Image 1: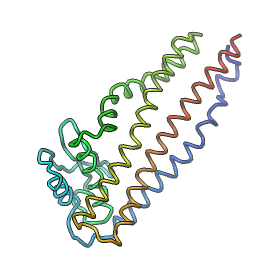
Image 2 (image 1 turned 180 degrees about the horizontal axis):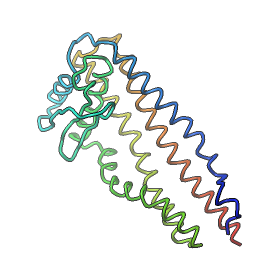
Image 3 (image 1 turned 30 degrees about the horizontal axis):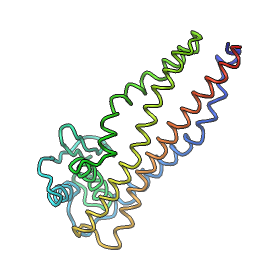
Length: 235
């Protein structure tokens, strides 16, 4: 069984420390980078919403609508309703940051339209990953408290689904950013010297997904370490 002190101190938290540090850095990086290029107007003079609609049309996508949503950096593409939702600063913004983010979300719509395999896989495992992230820790720790290897193992397996989701998300996000830059360049929405600033915005955003993936991996390793220590102390 667990040593008495374990109810008050978990030594395995150190495993996730690198991911926590990266997560804080990534969040600060995306905020500062977005804020910086939010002040830099794009030469084309169009809003994020206007550029998004033009990119969609250029790719033969006519069944996706562009709407404004509340919040900051809350931009996303909803494949179920085929709606591209942009935050106010992106929807009506004329900055390089606004154009980059809007084009990135168009990248997801393009992926959906062409049947990009990693996106299809991610959309398929979303329900399983959602259940896994909610059920994993309760099952795991209830299993340890009840000395049930079955429940603890189920918790680990459930969390593995969430880890898989994060793995699949990485190529989806990077591919959407690549499509975004290509779409902006080919249509002439950004000039040569504006490409690098747009890439900085998108790379900063992508770093948050890298941090999330690392966190998921290290959390899984932490669960495995706890399970191993539990079994060792229970003998």
